[in-house]
Length: 92
Length: 287
Image 1: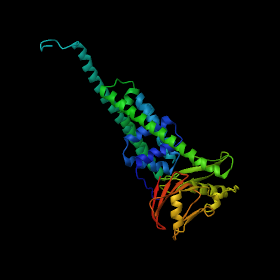
Image 2 (image 1 turned 135 degrees about the horizontal axis):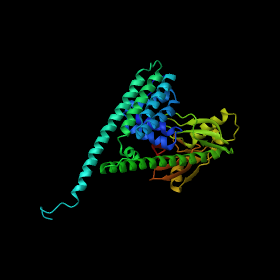
Image 3 (image 1 turned 60 degrees about the vertical axis):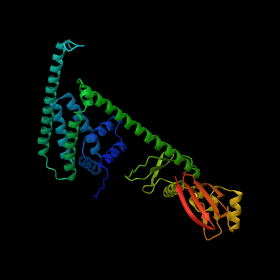
Image 4 (image 1 turned 90 degrees about the vertical axis):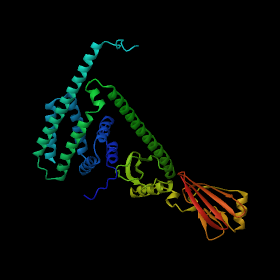
């Protein structure tokens, strides 16, 4: 992979999300999430998605599930999420 | 009210409020502990993964970023409201601000979509030139990240190829037609078009108006408008050549020895050429 030039990572990531086939609700969750992260983390996520486009749907699900787990306050749900993400990373 | 009068309201009502505040603080503390616990459980689990491939390493970092972001989001008033917690006045205001910001973003997105749809409509109207039924522009299949316009060329819904304007520029009518012509040729689709030969004067159907004073000045310079060649000879070595993108041209006098040629293109671009004594003195472009 060559050098990826990213001028404004947060806007770049927002553009990737906006251009994706995610639902409006999922896009809004991403926009709120992007608001909270630093530029370096945005770059990291952009690179992940650029290297493997399928990771966008995984990260979206991961984001939704984690938010839901925090709302319910259920530790077991969180454990399942972490288990699932571990399996997914190991499969790559 | 004098200073010895009782403060309005039942003082007993204040006690539960203070207690509520304490309860709330305790709840918040325990929620923070809960979040820390979750975060450390994840770190522990992920630390056991050996990441040999770069994608796995990136993913590991990405999921931790997601967690950190989720933790921050959970501190937002909207999250507290969704959890069914009672909001403080400040949180209510923050929530309102957030909702207004979201509405603004939504409106901006809608506006951008409308602008895009308008632009697509405008560019599609240029394709009438080909006289091919079902030929239209739509979304590009292979989107690239560039400050350019990008569209897919479709024939009766079938994608033929993508076209991209030059970086930082939008499509002019002529460029669009040239690019679409190339896509049609690549797909072996025959078409009859004068614009496929953009410099062909017969293809240029611009309306040229010369006012009598300007006509006199042009003639005094030995110049003329040649409709067959679609050129305006200004007497000297310079000729103004119209192209297929030219929609209207007006030539007016501006003094005894000066004419101004205003050229309006199909894409809205205006070019004003000032000619003085057989020479082009200035060319200005406006969009």
